[in-house]
Length: 262
Ligand SMILES: NC(=O)c1ccc[n+]([C@@H]2O[C@H](COP(=O)([O-])OP(=O)(O)OC[C@H]3O[C@@H](n4cnc5c(N)ncnc54)[C@H](O)[C@@H]3O)[C@@H](O)[C@H]2O)c1
Image 1: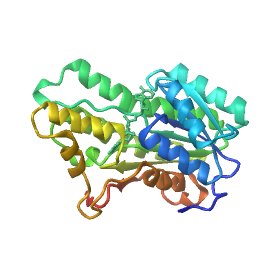
Image 2: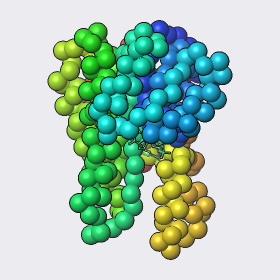
Image 3: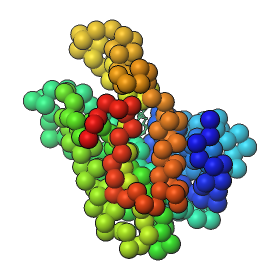
């Protein structure tokens, strides 16, 4: 089912961090469906290349790049290789993220720093690399926050706080860069069937909360009655990258099947 016109992102190149698997791979698929090119940036370049090969058999519209979103120079290099390959860059999706489960009283300073460095710092560095690559010509940035950044789920306090930071950073960047024709928005997914959600269920099983498969199956939005797919998130992100979304600015849009009413 195509939601956007097959040329909605034609002639556009968009970089997606954390694109090797999960939501990032769904975003790449939606960008390709809408006629765009995609750079798949991930810590895991091997899987990023496999995903690119699966989604773009002849390799003409994708590029896999190895980079850590906590490394500003690596992101600048990734943007430069993308522009060498496709000639320009006009969209960037800050999707890479990690979650570490555990009670708030057990979070260490290092653990807190790690989640903030990847989840919030990685968004800032990615946005800076994007702005530099846009070179005054404008563009669109979409940050993948989480409904956790609004709700605050138990046993993931640092993750929740880092995602709240992404939501607020999105508002700041939207205001600061509006004059450069850069549109910045965030989305707040929940219950998306990915390796991360499975890892959360595995952690809960290790903590004696039940069987991982049963826990995973229960992590569905009540109104929807099923998991959300990465491609469903990707389609909304692709829309936010398109010119049609120019009136949506600095927002944090829930993509969680109705779980979060604010
Ligand atoms: N799955 C969900 O239900 C859900 C809900 C809300 C928000 N999110 C957010 O969506 C994003 C993607 O989540 P997912 O479920 O697809 O996760 P995932 O763990 O399945 O995939 C994440 C990808 O990011 C990459 N990555 C991790 N750290 C990186 C780093 N430092 N630099 C570069 N790449 C890195 C990983 O290699 C992996 O390919 C994350 O920001 C996550 O917090 C997920």
